[in-house]
Length: 170
Image (cartoon, rainbow, N blue to C red; front, side, top):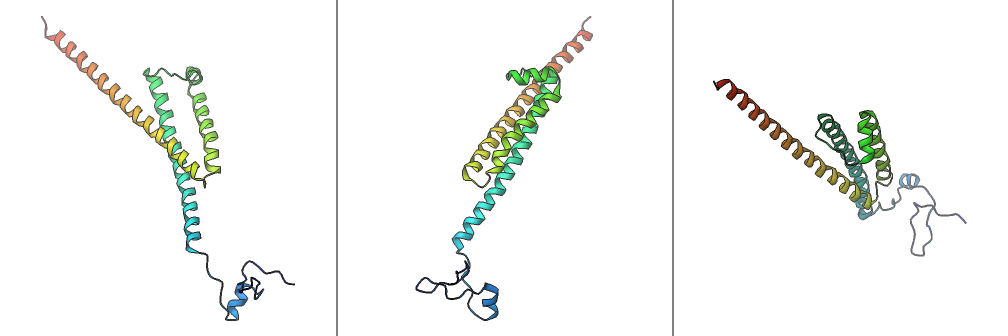
């Protein structure tokens, strides 16, 4: 008995009516099997789109993490930052190379499961939450630098005013 292939058309009894391949059936003028159902195509498209979205979210996480690293190093060099993470504080005390390698290693380690399981819905939601947390952190950095620049210019205005008033006094 011939084993039916996956492309065979089943008759009413559930047995394959032919074992010819699709290309040979088309050449003989026979009817091709129906294409996949539209719901299967939609589900496949959604899964593939999820994979692409997770990749974009991970790229966003990398970008915002780079900004966080740059602002951490910059504010530490300017004396604006007291790092609360004891490991990062120790690394910043001995230079920026170690903190850069530390952050890259952490992000690589965290990105692997997100990219490995990128077709899962929970991965997409997790990547979105992580990106949202880094976006909030970026807003926090922006507010810190706005506050720092406004206080720095205010102190400069006060210093200039005192300097000018010292020249005007007899």
